[in-house]
Image (cartoon, rainbow, N blue to C red; front, side, top):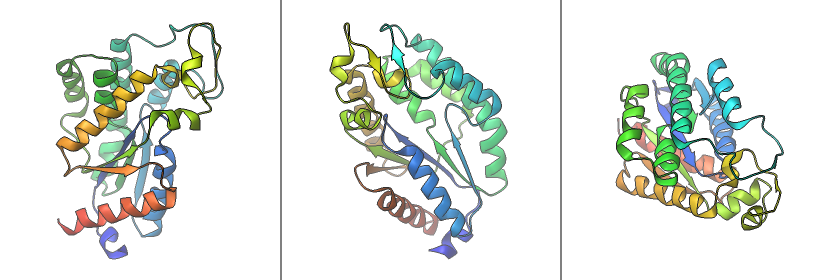
Amino acid sequence: MSNVFDKTRGLFLSLEGGEGTGKSSLSTMLGAKLTELGSDVTICREPGGTVLGERLRNALFNNPGQYKWENTSSSPDPRTELLVFSAARSQLITEIIRPSLDAGKIVICDRYVDSTFAYQHYGRGLSYELIDKAVNLTTSGLMPSITFLLDLDPREGLRRHGIEDQMNLFGDSERIGGNNYLDFESLDFHDRVRSGYLEMAAKDSNRWMVLDANMSPSELTRLALDRMALYLKSK
């Protein structure tokens, strides 16, 4: 396997999934394993990954940690959300992703354009055409060679973020826990996001690989490496 990865030049990978699916953990473990196997790896995330991107992330999500929400109007307007994510992505591609690919590195991105379709189209209901225009403007057609979808029941993902009963967080209940406002969207919203991801993956099985996020990080890393090796051997 190491010989396959030693010869890797400019491979772009993305990790996708709902809240609490373990994308960050897989990104870290996969990056460490690939480095061990002799590859040059760049790990990045959306939104963020650059100085400007992290500022946009903080403006949107506030500071990470524990939250006590006072009302149900904390989510930004969907079009604002789309534009902020798009701006952060444009900067990330320009500063990090394209230069790393040009240098022959493996790029692992925790979320990419598929998150925008999953959350803003399937979740929020913005038109596909509007999102497609924003995506094309920022990416100029740059897409991952492989996308790993970490699939998980949203209820389990929210529980991992410290939310035991999402339904009790509405009405007069206080919103405590979670990583950001997305954790406190309705279960219907999270179910739509998950369904959107699965629908996109089913339409393009050559790029997507669906992984059961209930598996251990080590098992997920092994499966991801196997999929990468199969892809590289076919080139």
